[in-house]
Amino acid sequence: MQKKPLEQYKQNMIERIGAYKTNSSLQKAANVFFEEIGIGKADYVYNLFWLGVPILQIPQDLQALQEIIWDVKPDLIIETGIAWGGSLLFSASMLAILEACGVIENGHVLGIDIEIRPHNKEAISKHPLSKKITMFEGSSIDKNTIEYVRLFTKNYKRIMVCLDSNHTHDHVLSELEAYAPFVSMGSYCMVGDTVIEDAPQEMVSNRPWCKGNNPKTAVWEFLKTNDRFVVDKDIENKLLITAAPDGYLRCVKD
Picture (cartoon, one colour):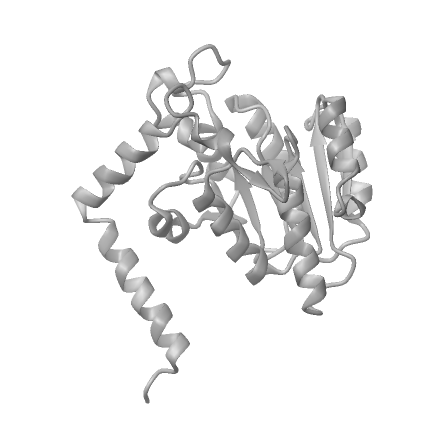
């Protein structure tokens, strides 16, 4: 039986992705490009905005998140780490699209940061999408914060989590242990900046995280004792350029 056009398109994509893994010149080019655009060199991520607000993300990762959100259709996205707020607005805009398409109702984003700078808070609060965002100031791993999140999630059916705050091993591992239980079956926990493990040292100098002490090592440690999640390697394989290798965790068990 002949496949439908979209099914064939997806099959062709899968075959292309499979070939990428053994294409050494392509992998080398992607690695060189990523290093050249990195912090301390081109500072590329500081050039980008989402709906008028700075968003410190690699565009390929935003594309991946868009695909995930469309497929998963969460009604709540929890994010740790707010910075300028672009990621909150990205998530809020995606939930607004899901609402407009009639597939969810009352989608919301919960953003958590240990310090929300006044000018960033003001910019987010005045944005047209602010009604879809709640900001909570406090450490993401403080027991009071986690209890607040637990109570907040009771009103939602399908939850996705993005962890992108303090990038040390211990902090991210604590976040994973605290927030992974909120993730719905079939949804994702996205762990940002796992690339620190693979990046040149100059990209992370003067920071408390480094090779051997970063989000990727936390993910590896977390997965040793948690079988609800698997690393979705297909995402990073097709992106080629990502700040989150081994960071797209798909929930495969209730």
